Length: 457
Image (cartoon, rainbow, N blue to C red; front, top):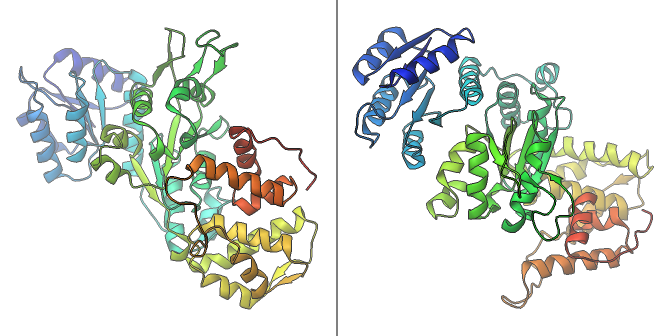
């Protein structure tokens, strides 16, 4: 049973009919006292709560009832609804324990989606399984590890993947946030629809609208043809917004609108488009600290953070390092045509003791670089040690340019040039030495307009 609390008869009737059409039992109330009595006696599965019950538009009545509900029942899902479009008021409600907020006039599909998502999340119970049980139930083939912290994360992914809940993945660089996002999509009902990745850290505010929402021919000087935006590409599927903590303030406002209303306008067109996409975000930054510093919008944080998945650093699950190393070696055997490749047992134990600040990405880079350089079939500690000393993350001995003498953009361009020159334009080797993928290296070569003639790897 769903309880709707609103002083407006038209709102109560409209929402009731909407939910009843999907087979839901609905009870309505027009005041706080009656609403709490229903909650205490009939224990609804979900509450849709108006923030104002009178001419007063401060929202204090709704927030007061929300606090009372949370004191009585800490888990019943609550969706706030307000006709005053007060984001600040909605954020206060989220802090008090609301699960979502909707502005009047609402989008029927969004209301139904939010209700279904919250009900599904409430029903699903966590039962920690071992890795074999998880692999039978879900598709996690690209995620390597058996540490209990990782198993708990995989269990959570399995539970929430089938919902439409927005998910925020946090953790240090190199911990595998993109793999987790892909796993969420692969285990969802949107599996056969697009999975679109967007690195927000690489999109300037001037290009944000064109990149995310598309543009029509003639929208700006260089717009010679129509372009489809990333959100339209991801329609009915999943959009993965990586490095969301790097998004500039002006772009945060534009992103919030499409997440809140599920509508956007193509640049150069006045026609509003609607999008249905599952949003998964990731960052290695502390968004709560950024909110406190005024660098990240609090309302945007609540929009993207219905479910938070925090990935542990690799040093926090050292038992998984041998599994990862052997997984990398098995792949490299095929890539480089060296079927006899292996890693000595004492080398695996040694690798487990490394701090690896770059996490899985650094470990993969170290293993591949060692395979490229060493001619041995069995890799020993000395082989890894020699490459670890060259690691860009072992920076205690690296001499960096003085502050103010070079920008980050210039440093990145210079490192890319050096890697390409050192490896004689061999893309695979240059990318491995920089700790990035081939595609990432291609993007940086284009970004910095670095000319090259690719050499066969």
